[in-house]
Image (cartoon, rainbow, N blue to C red):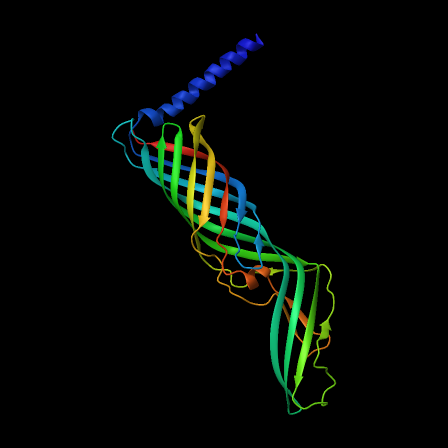
Length: 296
């Protein structure tokens, strides 16, 4: 009896699925869909720079979905339309560097004496986690043929939060003072340590220079299942940044003033100091539950 019940239920579910999907395969009228979805996968900002090594991290998004599809001439042709919506997207990755060396020059006049302070800071075994939360609007051409779908277009995004957390093994600074009048100051012309080892230091702050606009090439594809009268779309996605979402340039990771002993220290973002761009990349799997409405 149990086997008979399971068999009847399976046949019933298959019949319902085919009946619901028949609206897509047998109708040619104009169609609209609304729904919600989820994307989960890998992501990276692809930070560039001679000293940097960017790693693949995590990406995810919650999608609000809207689609409009034009009337087609026959059921042998696919539905063609436009897919859009509103998404909240998150990307996180790590970037590392073995050693960063920054050079500074500070000019100062003390008691009528012109001094030039040349100093170098070194920081070792750096690793930084970059996080960005964005609001995105996709604008994509879309095609649905039987149970298959494909979307191609762009995603326009507005970064809302761009933060970093930097950790490193140790840091040191050396200073060389060029004294105009010999013997006026008791500072040797050879390198002198301005501040010592800073173990496991970290900083968590906004990335300076994070852009207010980004745009990515976007592709989605997959298969449509039916649940009751609605659709469950399951597939894959791929996004490739076309515009840098970082406006920064070259700078210093460690900033200090050698005129103060011990020197004051400020730790900046590795990405913000060493990377020219952050063109994000993300790919993974997606699912969306939608409510279709076909004009017969």
